[in-house]
Image 1 (cartoon, rainbow, N blue to C red):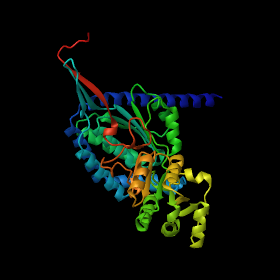
Image 2 (image 1 turned 90 degrees about the vertical axis):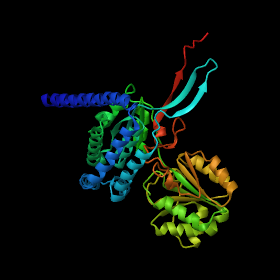
Image 3 (image 1 turned 60 degrees about the horizontal axis):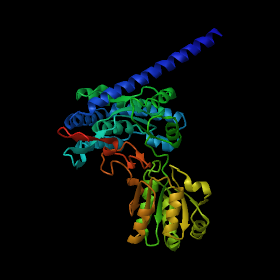
Length: 437
């Protein structure tokens, strides 16, 4: 009984200490954010470029830490998709470094004048872009998020608190130390970017309630994590739950272009949120296009889940498939699996996507401008494509240098979130003694 009381006291003390740590971090981040709001662009760019050089200098050290996480992940039975997200290979190192350099080269959004109004009484009302303040980023698997979020928040004048997943803890910790070093060497507040040094869920529970210090939460990860954050946060949350993306092959589509786009959208990186999960084919193109596209997908190792019409066409051409059910149309596979359906019109394709999609990224392949314009205007998604793979929904590809996340919400930010999406605005009113009568 004594031991039970002792263990309870230890557990209570640990929880109390963790609660105090997170509150301390939030208060320090708030103080840092007020300083960052007035830091000149040159100083922020200096810190970001120093982060890039530190990454280049410490590649081997970071690979050692990343291997620790990969070994632990394999032992824990992580899926191949999760391990793929977790790995920091040379391509991802180069992408992080190039992303940092690109962000440093971008125009600073802070203090940008958005619009000006001259009041009849002679004073001026100017709307200017300002940082949001303190941003909490909660993410899983991908350690490159640590650097991407740090540089984007810093350039946009925001302090950030980063909470990575347990599967990437060693890699994230090593990356965060380099970020802190770059801040210190550049004369910026060391608390401008902070990494929560634990994966204990209690830390997250505390963080999500600190709405006086933190202005915005951005979760990045699986639907379970994002729903937990959205349901438990008293702080505004910018999010997308999943990426159920669709490519629609119209009757006026070029076969080669259609196959190239579908194969790329599904197989280039199947474990990400902008990979295609559904393929729709117009009935008038099904016999001519579907067999070739399906064959190309199967050659890449993709499992096909198909409706009855597609099944009949694939059987005639000796192509293997599985039968799709209703749940498949709304499933985010994040793997080499795609659901296929034949539709009778562009309008039917639009209705399907608006019903089963997740408002993320959807594409039409067609040589018909009118049909394409109908699709682009009618799909209720944050990013829509005409003859382009959905894999381009990415902050780096959109010229943002990197992204802090992708939003499928409609308030404040939508689609890939870069520097401008990490800002709010305020009004500066300047006069010479005007009073209201």
